[in-house]
Length: 482
Ligand SMILES: C[S@@+](CC[C@H](N)C(=O)[O-])C[C@H]1O[C@@H](n2cnc3c(N)ncnc32)[C@H](O)[C@@H]1O
Image (cartoon, rainbow, N blue to C red; front, side):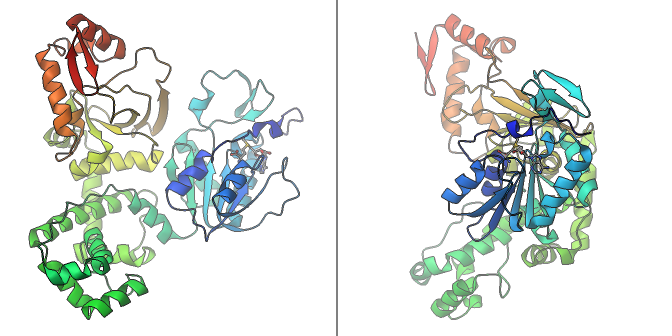
């Protein structure tokens, strides 16, 4: 069924900035000046214009707004908010396949989501709505979109963000993306003063950073050729350079880096289980080498990772792990952690959160992560003023339920009394430099009796009333009388 009265051309709006899917792909490092981009269903062509201004080679086609353009293959193809304006399911599938056929490396697919339909008045038709402006809109659930993409093109999509999926041509690239999602942390390295090292510190920096990232020295070919040549010229050989780095650093430091890298790899291998777990030969060489050197064999890594995944399905185990975490704010039903401290919670909880990210992708601007211990549910909370406001308010949340496989978004920006945070230090990592400042404020607020009625202070209105009643005000992170 095609509806003559459906005004598809009206769906294309004017964009003053890069669209969310293109901004996400750029932030994930997929738009590089040497890669070509094609915008399939480009509307008025604003993404093309913005990307060209940024120096990219971009082209695009749209049946309504740019019908004369040629549909050409490109490294990255964008299919941005096109599928949801097509009323006929078979045409939707043909459009997805056509865009995928043009993608040499990556297809970025985005659609509007069910929560966009809240408050929208429209006439139900087929599997969507005719809106008041006469356009058709099909709103998707995150898992519904993932399943439909996979059924239509036979490729496992990877959630980039709510409503945005990546389809990779090459499995190694897909796995690099999955691995890049694991939070990483490296302790600061202390260097013993030594003249020979100091004279060559700059040349050695890329080698040091490889060793810190991978917890091992590089194999031939893993460092860029010019870097390896410069090190060889300055130090005689890569082996001598590694020995010099080891001489000026503690063995304990490298042991700690190894523990950290092993945990990251395990979390990655656990998460790679979704869909089909890749064979070792499908991974890129560096990732495969990390796994082999840190675990002995890939099978061994998979065995450990599967145990972690199994543990994630056990609510009692999750509860014990959450309660034993020395990082994060504990409440009866959840553990709340600042994004920057995620590497410091137990690995099983990192996998638990990673499972939610496999489903939802990365939630932009979310800085507090709520790991529920009463049901399999992770929420990504956005407190945009966390750093500067002593009691930041909640702007929006994305909740991922791993039992229902649902992803839901809530907006608090228009709420007159949104939830707000206290004791910000509890969300942070053990060595976060902001901790002392926040702790001082918490002590002052406790002394002033502001926490005596916890049930009153969880929302903005109640908190303001409490401050007024106590005759105190806040300036920055300081509590003032009167
Ligand atoms: C909501 S707009 C999105 C435009 C642009 N991608 C953006 O993000 O701003 C949807 C666009 O899809 C186009 N479109 C409709 N049917 C299409 C089809 N079968 N193939 C490609 N594009 C189509 C419409 O002409 C419209 O410009």
